[in-house]
Image 1 (cartoon, rainbow, N blue to C red):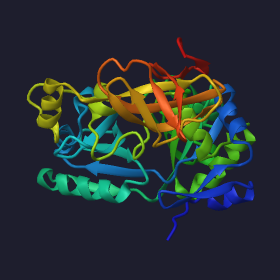
Image 2 (cartoon, helix red, strand yellow):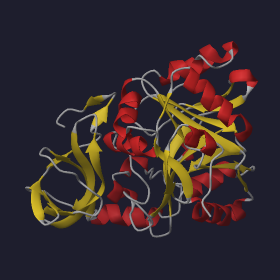
Image 3 (cartoon, rainbow, N blue to C red):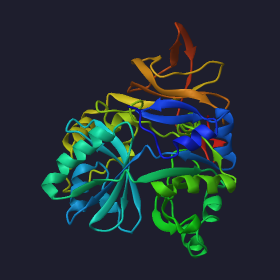
Length: 366
């Protein structure tokens, strides 16, 4: 049974091409995927991300619980509304999911986790929460709209109650706050996103989602589908769960070492394995690849290096760069001249540091 977001009819009325995405009926594009990509890089676009799972955690020991559950340290969260990106690991150090956690009070934290991993995430979180007496409450009553692009924040702020303009305008990156939207609707506005552009991810009660979408459209925010979202996040160097990492991949191997906090006296799930991997030297690394000639880099293609064979993880044509880019996991060590096996033909590629694009422009060396 395919699930539908509250905006499903709205997408169909706009002529969206719908696809199954992790069991959800979602818009891949509304016309030109390339144009949707460019509008986010140059102006402002919006995505229905209501398929994402919002989980509220309540209880006196919630912070203690999250110190145990997450590889990143929630002790960094000291200011109300501040957000943190982290991996949630199994005992083998593999990534169960990557998520964002918001600090809304010493006894109230909010998680936003991936759609395709909802069932296993909830099961794992509930199992671990029992020992800490933490209440785990999924929030299917919420929808979520991401508004991204250089003009995104200004267009959203223009729709808020006047009393909120200055406060939300000053909201720092990776922080969230409550605000009043059109007709007084209650919004949870987070300055986060998955495109490499500035903007907001807005959590809104389902009954107000269609009105908010329509108000954003009237303010000149263009609808964008999951196709553009994928090329935008790839250009921005952001991992996709299930493609770039999973339960059998550690954060070290997914270039997410920056999300691991090996602070003293905190025994989080998977920590011992991560420490052992670090001490022994990580065997596989994740790198960026650029294909300067014509062709497309696709998931699963073999990557040939001096140290053995790796594979393409996320790969696509990058509209901002007008060439193909990819993430690849390859054996550690100096890779030498790297080639990708594209249908039996060995094609040379450049190994680069990503992100590929920042602030709408190609990064140095790309």
